[in-house]
Length: 157
Image 1 (tube, helix red, strand yellow):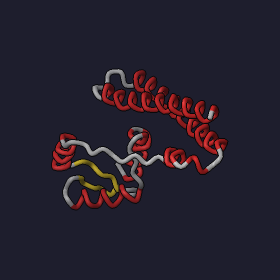
Image 2 (cartoon, one colour; image 1 turned 180 degrees about the vertical axis):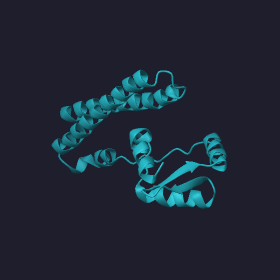
Image 3 (cartoon, rainbow, N blue to C red; image 1 turned 30 degrees about the horizontal axis):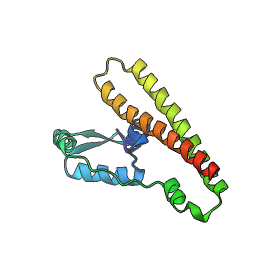
Image 4 (cartoon, rainbow, N blue to C red; image 1 turned 90 degrees about the vertical axis):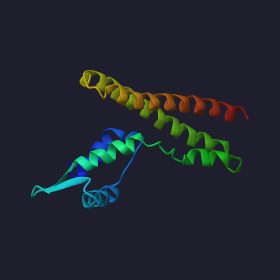
């Protein structure tokens, strides 16, 4: 794939929980090529890359390593934490906006799940794709519940 293809693939698959910019992808492709982990081929229109045998070995090694847990950065929570300093209406507006975003994400996750089950029923990777989607569905459902409870408590306070 080209760097553009990789970016598009990320956005359409793991982009809901992992993100890379072109500014990260292209330098990393050059580094991986220098290390012999990918092979680049200039097709005249673009440069495409393929995983080398050494790259596949490095990928498998990476997949066996214990994953790091990322830091949570949630501006909504930060603003709520300092919420005593603003009007309740402002907090409710922030939460309502976040709830709408979460509800939209939930619908996207559900449609992706249905599409994958329909279009990739025989793919041996399907269960693993669905595991990641299920986490998104459950976390988003929990977030919506938390927002609803928090908004109710703010309105009653």
